[in-house]
Image (cartoon, rainbow, N blue to C red):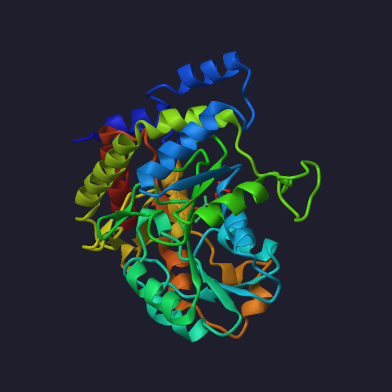
Length: 384
Ligand SMILES: *Cc1c(COP(=O)(O)O)cnc(C)c1O
């Protein structure tokens, strides 16, 4: 039980961020070892160790590390030889990088609305967007909750399409007992500082397809030719991860189960405490899913009695940071003109109602209790 006086004291002293990385293992030792070895580029041994360990963790044969989650997505699409005029199906409700990675190839992001229950791409609205230009379906495991992949795979099989998981938010999540990353042709992860494990900046593409893995490795680093090194037959990229970053990643990976458990336990505590408050919709978890709650996300409904901006600014007064949900792709200044004739009511609603509360690996039980007591107080004060 947190007293009002404690709240006042705490709000002066603390600032609870939405996310911050936690280093509790070998990060410093591995980075030091890497520096001492002088092998700090992508040629250093930590890169292959990190790639092998992470792909094994996902239950997949090949890991190809990249400079970010965005470059992993672009590399995956480039590896599939996407051409201008091709189409890639993605949800409208996602982070901008999902759409941009498609645009980099010249192909068109084709948008599908979300479904209201789990906030992921509405698998029942994908088929109507498939035509002969469609090459890839790229679902996003939003905020750590996996998509309903069986339906997506059935469509991909029927129409001869590739499936790329954008798993940037879902390390360790499971669909019907199988880890995200192992569910499709290719999956892409991000290791940005706010993700479930981090390398500061970084990403990885994982796949069971040896041919795609080999091709992506060549494209990742300028497409040097095997027979004549400085001879280039394809436009490749400078998308490598450094061994320094991989050293951090390998140490983070050693604690990934701990981090996933922290997130799940924190989410369960939040949901238990917030459950009593009227006007808040809690984050979902399907019976076939293991949600890793990359973000602890809630919807502020009309009967909460306060608009989102006011609520967020009051949280800030208590020293609590929060984030709005993504603005959907179809309303973004850089994309909106392409989707004027389509409607995405669920994406609009999620974007209007959703906020992410502090969710990082560092978040502690007493901070969650404090956050919830502040939310209760904000609500009570509002009634006066
Ligand atoms: C974070 C994120 C990315 C991009 O990852 P970066 O490492 O920041 O480039 C891509 N897709 C989704 C869904 C993300 O959340």
